[in-house]
Length: 196
Image 1 (cartoon, one colour):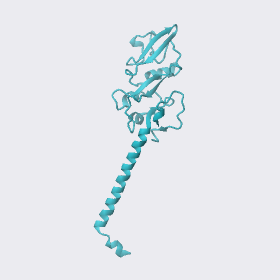
Image 2 (cartoon, rainbow, N blue to C red):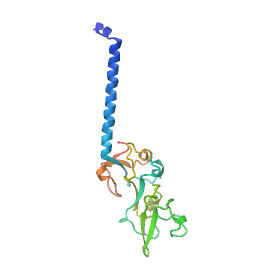
Image 3 (tube, rainbow, N blue to C red):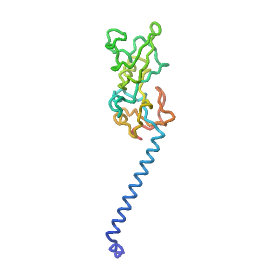
Image 4 (tube, rainbow, N blue to C red):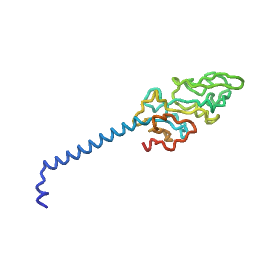
């Protein structure tokens, strides 16, 4: 037995080491391919039931204008004249003047319907995903505003930079065929960034 150990040459040692390295490298490549195939079947989405409106969606996206946008659930909206998602809480007058609006980019458009009702619409091309309107709507309204990752803009990065920065873990990888999580919808079976 000792003779066999002594007969092991330096060449044998190097050959065995190279085989081990090649096996590890091949395993790593297979792992990357499997993850990329899985990523095609899923998309990143923000769970509005967990979001804390931290404002990081506006600054942490790899895109210069965030793929996260405010969404208005019209069927939940009270169409109020005094809207917490539209007006600043300290506004002196509840009109459409810029100094009275909570949105820094004026992405929310308000249209008079009839006294005292107004319609609110998000202009997504102006929205930066800062969540100020969502925070105001949650604090003083009926939570009809929330954030979503818009997939026509999203790059679907393998590891979403916003998901990494999100303090509440509200980002999920969900099946691509059901690409949006609606406000109030349960998301128990979707994977969070921590389990992705």
